[in-house]
Image (cartoon, rainbow over all chains, first blue to last red; front, side):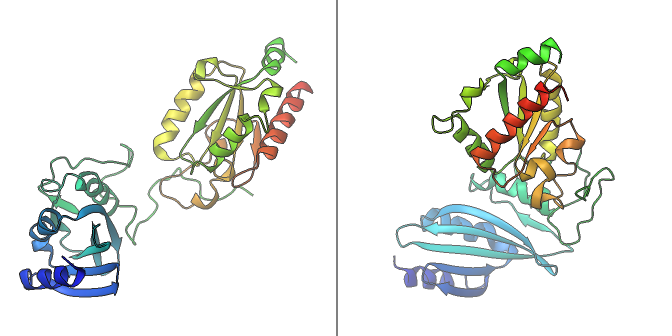
Length: 157
Length: 141
């Protein structure tokens, strides 16, 4: 399928789930979707369109926490970023890890650094942070405060 | 100068430890070992095990996970030993000073004998630093 066919197909098939489509460049398109439909949408892009899961990224935009799942369709060199906005009051989303194994570790990382709860994840342990890191402190949030009293933050000169 | 230190200076074996660096300093250290710079003319060899080493050479900004390993390695190195910090991250953590993951600089964790600044330091700077370290120990300071 060509680029236009794929985009029209997605728009027809998921017209209730898509909030916004931002066509950034010939190689890149951002599709904002509802958080509830992420599993169905990602499954279709991954299984039926033959896309490769590249990476997911999480951003704290103060109003929301955004998760972007980047999929690449290599035959036509198109990078589809699925954007999901989660409200700060309810940081929950269905996990993609049972469907796409490659999302397992990046979801663990987003979970520990931004505090998003991935429902249905098989193994939501910490990935990078040390064991003594306190619960409920998420370092990549905008409102992160220094908690370690022994930390030295000057150069000593 | 004690006999132990004198014996150590003849051919110091170096253990190279990266505590979370970007690998640029590590590449420059490997450069020193190549024939172009040839740090082996000072008798220096890379040791595969910390228990064979005389010099602990550290790069990187000491993040929370690697500080535990660093302390464990420092306990295992035969004493007397020398500690060399290479690169801006190991010296003062560089731009990672406000990072949540790098709470304490290296020289507040273990005593450091020589600092080699640069981001990354050139092989010439590393050799100069090491030679200064040898001179310093020889002079008995």
